[in-house]
Image (cartoon, rainbow, N blue to C red; front, top):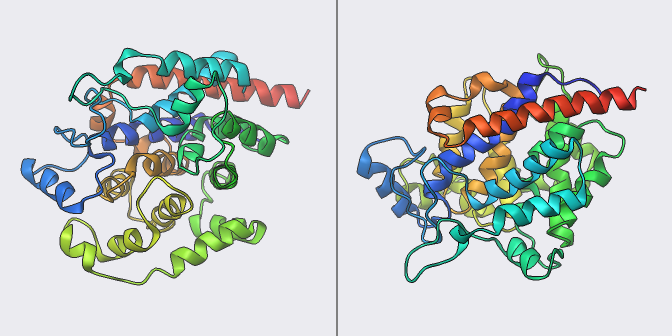
Length: 337
């Protein structure tokens, strides 16, 4: 294992969570016209939108999405145990998701929402969902990758973590693939990060990622969605139409990879996450991973102060990220004897 700067580890963990909080008000809105109207109504940027328009749940302002909370459960476990411990992680899932806020009261939207794999986990005393090919598998893993990037047992650790809640083979394959992509970004030298080179290297090593890039390359420009959502570019609209914007894999990961791959030198965290927020559908699962990759590249400096101030529990998340930095140092010392 090699050292990774504390700035980039914290940037990856916090870049993920802040982006998720920014996107949550517009989570799971599949109708592009609704997204466009919501953003236009207040004449503001899409992040931390004042109206929570998802029909599924209504979190408190500045709070995490249901995917972000899965990420947080893992982060809590890693920070508390200083390592990945399956039983400790299971306990953190129970502690976080056994909460009255997930209960629906009459016709009102609940404050929180339980995804399929979490519902199954809680109702079966901690067993994994065998038939869930959704994006939870990789939306939650950034803190684990930050702790174990470069570790000789990296693949086993990531796989064991995913299997706690999802044992579907598609989820296992794409969760591990996403972890390997983020790992490669983190292990690059600070001044030598080229996204296209990293992706091409991974494509040579992994046939599934090669197929992912082929799917992105096959996207052709179509203007149907662009006409419905003027705030989207025709390129982004075409990608959404052809790769899909739902929770399911492989489309969800392919669209995430599309946004990461299309990074340009003049792009920053703010502009990239804004593009992803208005990309409709299951934007939060994608944004957790995209925000983590952006944070791993640019460190903390890329995260806007005004977004940090709007993130409800940022100070708590920062302390947890500091714990991961310390735990990684201890792990490297242990491996090096």
